[in-house]
Length: 209
Ligand code: 3PG
Image (cartoon, rainbow, N blue to C red):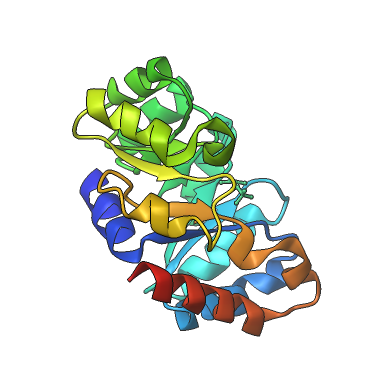
C-alpha cells in the first residue's frame, strides 16, 4: 500500500501544502491544482475546515490524490481517513498514527529530523519520511548524509522549499518529492486568487519535469 504513494509522489514531484480556512475553497482549489498539473493536495489539519475539505475534494475529483497534512494526533488521523484521505503526512513521528495507518494500509509519511527518528519510522517499514523543516536543518546536504546510512529510504523535504531551491532538492535521487506552502499562500485563498495558484503550480511543474 505504500507503493502507490511512492509511485504517485515520484511522478508528481511537488506536493502543495494547503491551509484551507473556508471549505467552500476546496472545490475551486482542487481544480486549480489539476489545471496546474500538480494532481495532489495535502490538506493540513491546521484549520477546522480540513476534514470537510478533504471529503469534498475526494468526491469531486477522482484524479486528485488527496491526503492530509499536519496530522499530529490519532484523532486527526482517524478524521482524515474517514473523510477519504489517501495518505497521511505529519510534521513529527507518532507511534499511534504509524500503527493505525499500518493496520488500515494507509500510507504514512512522518516528519523526522534526526537519525533516531528515521530509525523509528523505518521500524514501521515506512519508505518515505518528511524531512522538516528542511531549510533550517541543512537542506539537501543533511539529506545526503542521512541517505548514505539509511539506504532504501526516500525523503520529502518541506519547510523553506521554494522555486529557487526545488532544483537542488529534486536533483538528488533520494528526494522523492518536495512539499511546501508557497504554491498556495494564505493570502491567495483570502482573495480567492485560484488563477495565481494554477500559475504557481505550472511554474513549479515546469521546473521539476
Ligand atoms: C509543512 O507543513 O509541510 C510546512 O508548513 C511547509 O513549510 P513551508 O511553509 O516553509 O512551505
